[in-house]
Length: 298
Image (cartoon, one colour):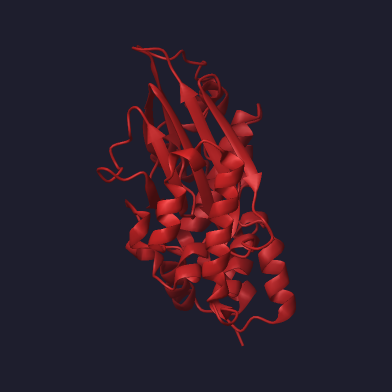
């Protein structure tokens, strides 16, 4: 029955990629000022965690740059120590959970700072905690509202944050301990992972109905499944993955026609593709491709 995961489905779901590394607009610009690193998740938490990541920056006084990020269908656990904290951070809090953000978000990068993060798989944090992901959609909340207080306290210790490898190990130990309390396989979550991996890889899946037929579930069931575990609907996830593909192609130097790019990603109407791209990115595909590299502003 749909939603009842057997051993082979569980194994495939856990090992398949369920997220991309796309999403940073004009990554070459950001790399001039911000050091971004990623590390794979350990085996003990791979069922729920996609990867680890870190950001570090140190800009001269009076200089700043803007990090523009396209949203992913994922949640993050982060510790953020910065001279200029982002406005979304709860006052006095450094360890936070950030849910799915549905629109492009911009971060003004100033001064110096260091961020360490755990990137959960789509639905991973909800499956791990038993809480509905919709509670965090469009929000950054103190991690203590979601995860055990002792883990949050440990991950906020400055001495640990200064050693990224040790911080990652502590995060994985705490999450693995929490995961051990999940007594049996969650068939709905395993089904979700399988569906998300399919959405990511198969560009012939154009609609929620296509996805439902492929996996033997109704669109209504898919909607409930995604809202419970991811915090957004399946239609949104499909569109984000394809638009991530489009941005990545342009960043990698794609020089073909925009119409051909749109068709390769499942849009048969260039105008529709351009409207969706512009609504998310803030400029048309052609303008994004033509935009010259910008210098950091004062």
